[in-house]
Length: 223
Image (tube, rainbow, N blue to C red; front, side):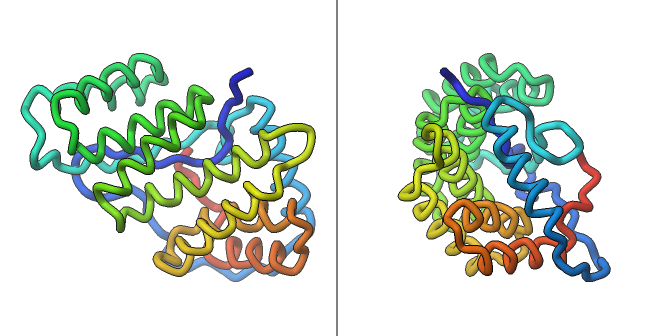
């Protein structure tokens, strides 16, 4: 049975920016155990088919990178896919991005967005394959790397009646790498907190959730 995603995924558009506005100044808040309980519950709810926690909607972040090597037709399919995404027409988005890739196999943003579309359809293995290909083409794309780490976490929590510890450790290793390379991706800390929580590493979970709050996590009004 296909699972619905709960973790936030970033989608590419055409301008090289994530569209994410980082807070200039946020008050530091100490960790509240209610956040840990609520966050854990929301992740589990997401595994059962509810959308991502922010605003009750799955957040798709437009960033629109240029398709430098793509043919005009490939870029047109790419833009068409983005329009489908914005209207929640994920299956049609898949078809459009696949057409773009068929015309330009090195069109990295199309792989990213195809991964997002597969993710939203609950086809996690296919989503992971697209993110991995996108990272082969652009290894320093940290937002796509985060997408993959969040996907590993989702797979770990969807593995059965109990989270898969090996997959959780894989998610942690991947997310910790992202945290070191780009500490400004605040969602990483929340995902790490969830992973550490399910691994039974209480102190690491608390630290991750506190950092998430200190960096303005949970105050995003976009979705």
